[in-house]
Image 1 (cartoon, rainbow, N blue to C red):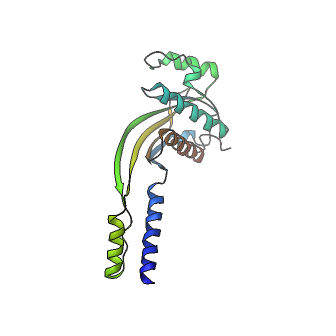
Image 2: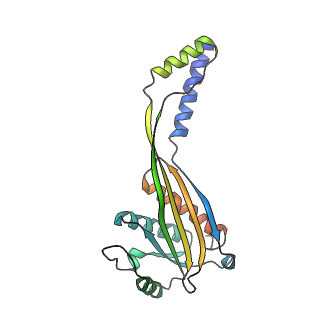
Image 3: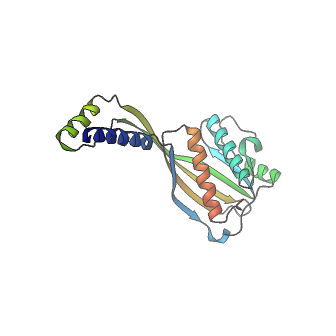
Length: 207
């Protein structure tokens, strides 16, 4: 009876560990800076700019950011839709000014990659045993467990929100994401964390 209980507990522990290890994305703001003069004076129309050397990544990021801002009740447009993109993807100040004047943006939000990394991990069953046979049984299961490998990504992004008229920094934040998910899920989670903090500081109106 005790042997079966130990065996069942080992399997349960391994299952829970597997669920935790395979959990999706964990994103947090590691630092942020708020211009107190802008608190309670939310912006309402934002030009979204993503800085990256990959055109598809920039397009995806900006589109998702615009969509989430609009869902939060804020008008927004991506640089892709507001500005003819030059071949080297570098925008001039004149291009940005023309866009904010045309689309009547009162703020510009810019996000860029700070750094990223990947880590490989190999995992087997849990380490739980009672008595000598419990130990033997759990180690036998461990030795015969094929295990699984996984890759964890660490992504750090910096996002700055600027007032168009004064060019002053309204809000700045750095996010850190630990994830086994695709880059598209990482993007969604980072944007959500940024928008939540902007709402918390009353820099955009909560829906």
